[in-house]
Image (cartoon, rainbow, N blue to C red; front, side, top):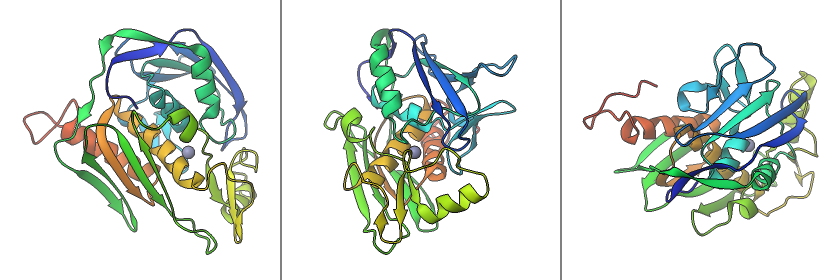
Length: 290
Ligand SMILES: [Zn+2]
């Protein structure tokens, strides 16, 4: 998420194929350039008469296991592509999706980073307009919280715990302009408790989830080899960046999260939009109406 400079899109189209993480069904996404100010939008090419679904907070339909956008026509598991595009500083894209879910690759954002890098990028004739926080905002639920603190640049600090006695809490940090998103955040995979994955499989869910697509945690530790000692916390940063990207503008803030998830990430983004976004309220503007 780059908060300075001009907007960017890709130089040429890119095609991504794979399977959906939750559906397990074949999935394909075609990335296309989009004009300055367009933002990111998803178009279901397998649904006759479908119109583009803007990747905006107003379009969030579900956040339970992945982020689902849209109304009667939906697109699921958008968060890793959203994270990759913002991590690489590409804010304008049209994504044609064949199927109800984006391909998952290896459960990280690498499949999208590789496609975006192969597509190249072009600077556009429009400046970025970051959201600047004037005071802290936060969201919490049970033992989970997330806050956005005023800062000169974008930064995320994340603490996670897994429900396994063998697993120590993990922390990770990402700082705009200091850390390399493609190297330090994008390779971190989706993770889950092996017992929960088995229960989902028994219900016919999470069909694309295997040791090839997630970092699985058993009673005695990881069932496959972690890519980083704190891969779980790094993946949470990946998710948080993708969810904050639904603001449609970069945000200059230090995000601090403890045991949060998509629901709280989106709740924080909505609060940032309400207080400091285009339609700010309580400070002389109108309510955004989320
Ligand atoms: Zn994720």
